Image (cartoon, rainbow, N blue to C red; front, side, top):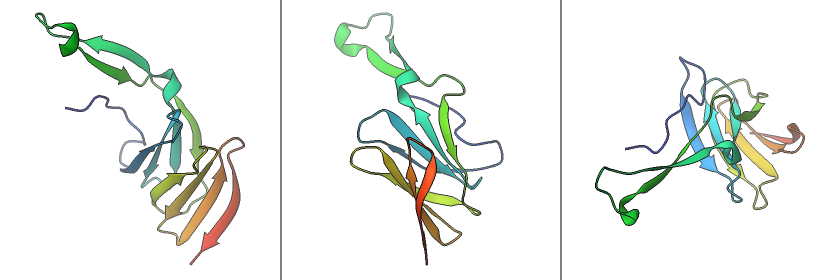
Length: 118
């Protein structure tokens, strides 16, 4: 069973990829709505779920994303965004799209640093 369930992209679109940043602070999702969305995981609340007769070792810790914790929507692609990868320091993100481009994003500013075509 999933630990969380939330609407990463608008109804009628597909979430194509989800990856956690190396520092664990962000989750990126890519979608058929031509965007990549960055989610702030520090806002997720941790709760402990247990059964009526559970011991401490049986308790399961889960995180629940609050509504609207999307910190950035990266929307410069013109077709589906298929994949994304974070830099080792979690400061940059590369997205790839069906529009035959890859974009390098500065996550502090939300700006495209470089666009690759081909």
